[in-house]
Length: 249
Ligand code: NAP
Image (cartoon, rainbow, N blue to C red):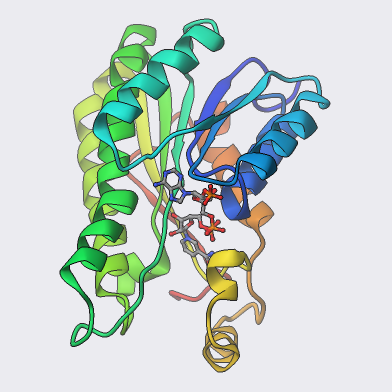
């Protein structure tokens, strides 16, 4: 039996990068996958077709994770499409708008907090009732090494990612008695479009500081999510799993 057979997962930001990797690996492990995107509709539809060919149910939804009502509407639609069941929520959607504190605008600070952090609140609140009724669920929130140790030029991003850790530990405490688990994955340097924007010199600096001497892949993060989403981790909640090649060691 596959590790996620019969489970239904929602993944935000599944059209590319880490979210796409999670969707692919989850489908390979037998999960039905509902995933969202912001604007990449062609890539999202292509991925939905690819996942469906693996024999699972898969559907792409355009939805702005930062919008509270959109998250409520999205979850209602997914419940209709996926037989009223949500076993796993992965809050993965995220953006960067980097700048030094001296130059960062209020708008860029607020946007990153809304897309990266408020989205986690929106989606968690939207699935809570269903998971409470089911008396089970696994919520996985995507933070970052930057949320643990900070990073110059990323005050907005680091604050959003640190906020995710506090939020997740609190959810774990609130919902643990109902068998709903909430954990955090903190990726290190993962090679996606988000990190492709970085200066090559900065990237070399990051790589040199990684004990395993390489950047990670979306699959490295997906495998950690399989563990946290599956019944292999039924006694694990409130944890931050660093998947970073040893960067924080
Ligand atoms: P990415 O390649 O830039 O992909 C971002 C994904 O999020 C896309 O699917 C995008 O959809 C979606 N998205 C953006 N804004 C959204 C919104 N408002 N509502 C719904 N979806 C939205 O990023 P990534 O590198 O895969 O990162 C994924 C997550 O891992 C993020 O939370 C990021 O902070 C975290 N992370 C990444 C790294 C890294 O090294 N890459 C390290 C640590 C943590 P569209 O395609 O439609 O734009």
